[in-house]
Amino acid sequence: MCDLSKKPFHPPERVRNGRRRLHQLDRAYHCTILGTCLNLQELYKVLRQSGITLPPGVSDYDAHRSLVGASGRGGHAAKRLQRFLDRKYQRSITGLGRCHDSQALEQAWQEAVKQGDIAGTFWALVTHPQSSDALLQKVYGEVHMLCHLAGASQRADLKRLAALESEVDALHSIAAGNSLKHQRQLLERDRLIAQLEQRMAEQKRVTRNQRYPDGDAIHQELQEMRRGHDRTQRQLERCRRRLDHVRRLARQLQQRLDSTELLLQESRGEHQAMEEMLADLLEHNGQDRRPDAADLRGRQGVYVGGRASLSPHFRALVKQLHGEFEHHDGGVEESRANLHCLLGKADMVFCPIDCVSHDACLKVKRFCKQHAKPFIPLRSSGLSAFARELTRIDQANTAATPN
Image 1: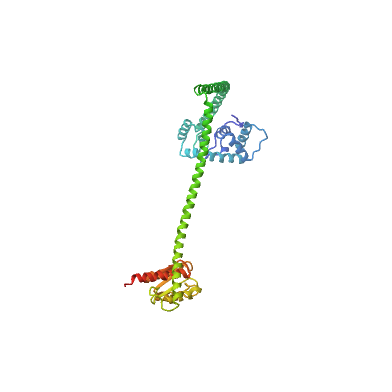
Image 2: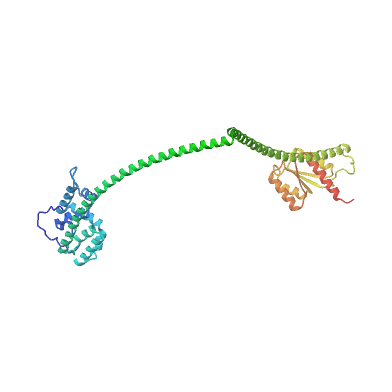
């Protein structure tokens, strides 16, 4: 312990209201307070905050003596240290604040000693306004002796630590020797295992040659057969993929062929109907035709869409078949309102699906369905498709008319 005070001991000054300040305590307590309540890191922190400069290379003891001397003189350093300790041990200060006499403070101190809470309770007790002089002397003596006991215990621990370090070094040496010995044993074991494996392989080869003299040749032939089998498998897989591709192409071609045949049948029917109708027209040339010739019997047909240049030919053909013909371009140049008027008077409606707007075709189809009128979609906008449908209509009417 360091004691910078040359004066005899005087009891600490009493403060009626509030806790005691550090400079109000006897200087004999300052060394014990700083040594018990501050660690080295906090000691240097308070020195820096207090503006106390120390020469380079100063020892921890000299730094401790500097702060003890500054706190005894009061001023900025003592106030800074007071605030630091109050913040650090606020919990202990609040706990002892419930004690209102020396007896309660002594009981609280004894309980703190049992629990090992020395530093915080010590600071709260020496600054408590109700701490008696006898209690302060007793607490100071106990803390002083605890420091001596701690120093003796620390020296014993250091001695025991040195012995333990020597023992650890010896154990490390023994462990290193054992590790080296174990590594040599592992290497020897691996060498023996390799020799045994080599001998077993040699024994298996000798046994196989004794049982099958041509074992190596058979083995090579077997390997060659396996490689050939693998090649055959790869070729077979390629052939299967090509076959699947060819099958897909064949299905596509068959679908195209079916559609082409259907189109061809339609074209043949249109061609035949066109030839019969043209032959009949050329043969009679407006005169009386044969009784079995196509006859629309005055019905009116409306043609929606198509090419306007073919409209006169359609009208002439319908007129030759004793029918009426009206044409509407589907709303390109003519009004949609006029289309409804024409559809209302029509007996049958023709609509080429290759030369009409999708919207117009749907409207015509919906109108015919609502008014129960025949809606006849044409495959193309040519004259042959129109003639074929006229022939079909006449044949249907002939079949439905009684003799």
